[in-house]
Image 1 (cartoon, each protein chain N blue to C red):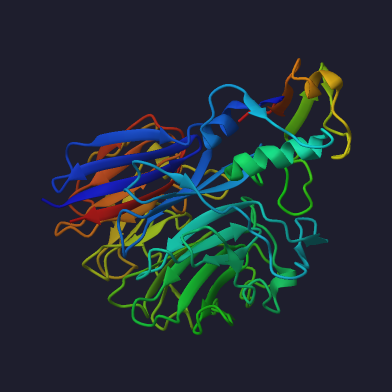
Image 2: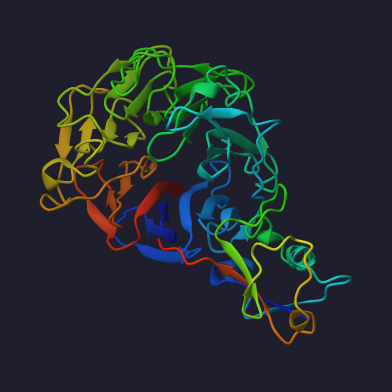
Length: 98
Length: 371
């Protein structure tokens, strides 16, 4: 079970309270977790990564186990603690005012 | 009893303001989509319960929301705006070619007769259409693909397609305006487009009367007389009597002819409203006095409307999509400010009162007249 934490504005958009728990088949990568997340919540498509090409949006960040995974490729494996559910995969709105 | 529903888009959410036909007591609902920028909310003329909203944020880009119950509940629909084919380039601020990049939806214009058909004007300037209630969007590429497209440059607010007008008398005719490319007209439902900027004079471009490149802020039309158009340009208030083939200035006695919105009285095609703003550098009313100006002569002769509006220390702006009129017998006029006020007049502008005073900066105001 993969635990995913979304920023507040995306929880509101997807009408989610708290963490999301996802079953991911096969290798647990950033890409496969985001695929599973968007499959369950289609309204999140385009809000975390671009429709065309799947590139991470500039002001979204991916953290886990106190590491910034934002610049890792989509097929990079997530830490074992995320795979086992001991630690959440954090999708974060970068600190930016306005 | 009939009533009105005012749809206000702000920097941090949407608000829905409703009243009966007297327009004195108001119910305020919101914020909807709290924290998100709401560039525009507009209802379908064919089904007033069908609303569309453009929701966006710097973090997460564009979302389109749809309501089928007048804004009580909402559903996210399609947000994929992909330019047709290879997008090509337009001019960047420094004059270099810049790839067309979708940024946001500025304006949503529902079809006059089909609630599921809606047009979207976007930044970087392009026109999209959905025929399935917003679930999917297809570009009408001929506008962006006009021969002049590679020479278009953004205005200070971005290169946005902000005005879409559908002609009720000629279903294939539509108008669009882009900052800072100018006004365009299609007579074949968007398959081809013609620049309609003859008569405009803009000192901020190398050729003041160029075919394109003018910073048009807003265009308005009265549905009973669709060949007459009114325009608030960056500077100058303009009028066309031939569907945009030519324009002449009607700024007349305005204290300044800079401004953003322009609108027309629901029952008097020659009654026009603008909100003069001091200058392109000072985006607030002259002398700290918030004044709507009304012309009952189709321009040139303007009267200041001040009753109920702040006449000292007022330094707000009124953005291009932030004025609307209802169609009750005594025409109501509404506008929102960057200071978060939404003002209403139930007597065609003779007197005003704030509906709300402390919203986030207002980006857009629309009104629906309800049965």
